[in-house]
Image 1 (cartoon, rainbow, N blue to C red):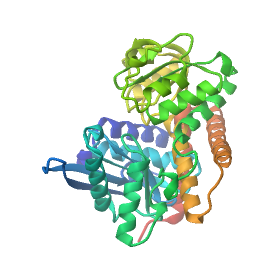
Image 2 (tube, helix red, strand yellow):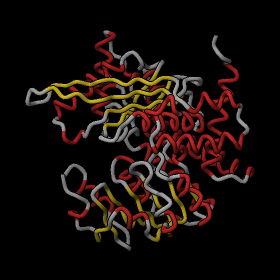
Image 3 (spheres, rainbow, N blue to C red):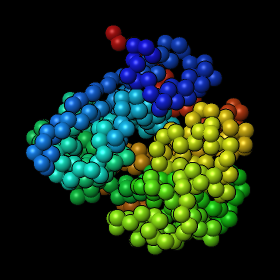
Image 4 (cartoon, one colour):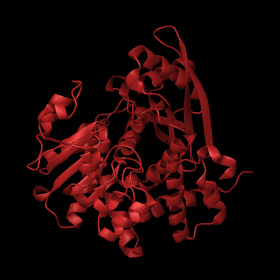
Length: 421
């Protein structure tokens, strides 16, 4: 990796280590192995914007396409101060395996800007987004690379990207991004899709382990889009959500939190979770160590490490976030008998409904919310059962099984297409 030292970050090393382990077990062709370790294309751009006080600030933006052998590349855009090329490349690689595992005709991509979005005014955020979209314009398009929301971005950010792209080509192109507002070609069910998908695979895991939903307790680290929708849908399904947290800490109630009241008090009010006074204050570390049936890390990468993995007290770990568990922690969780639903399976609901949105935009024909939920459930359940069966047959972990299925599909696409020229 010496020639690509700028990729050498902890997150990228984790993605490559996972890939290497799966590739070794598969006996993957060594030529393909080298190609699939690194992105197909990486773009690093300067994003200068005029701030409200008339200063010009320059941010760094990225767009990485890991693979496009199975179709256009697909992946979110995140705005976060810690965004770097290695992290974006790792997330793009995970997107490749995720799309293949779900049987979507996409490759993986990811993008981002190293910025703290909450410190920008709405005007500054819009100018940043439009300039970033203009800089990555040559790489994106409905048949080339389709961005979506991620950490620090939302439907409004996607609308600005869609508009900027459309202005460049001279007509409206709704299919250039997914996760848009409904008024410009967004899909019903997109906002809650990742959380709904997490719940779907949790339900399948509980059935497999013969645990009733009514006897299930849930702790969720991260209360953004994924965490909050997971909490709401688990609550509606009859589980007890005993703890939730955000970057500032969390709250715990042994009898189960009142999630509808919590959402009403917390979302968009400026209050912290502690301000709601609906439970006892706990730290993020304490939440991860709670005695519960299901633990959902839905925040950032590498939250479960060799240090805290021995202290986990859950029966099921459902990875709502990307790369929340390190390789060392994985082995500890396996020894503890914790049933891990890996990220590329657990959080694939977002890209699945993004695919539905892209299809609807292409057809100019939109589906009912019930159709979307039903099709999402079908694809998630099918991917879970396929992975579980593979893991059982090969005596592999769920993570290795999911990776092997995804990598195998991408490898076959490369072998069938051949090497150009």
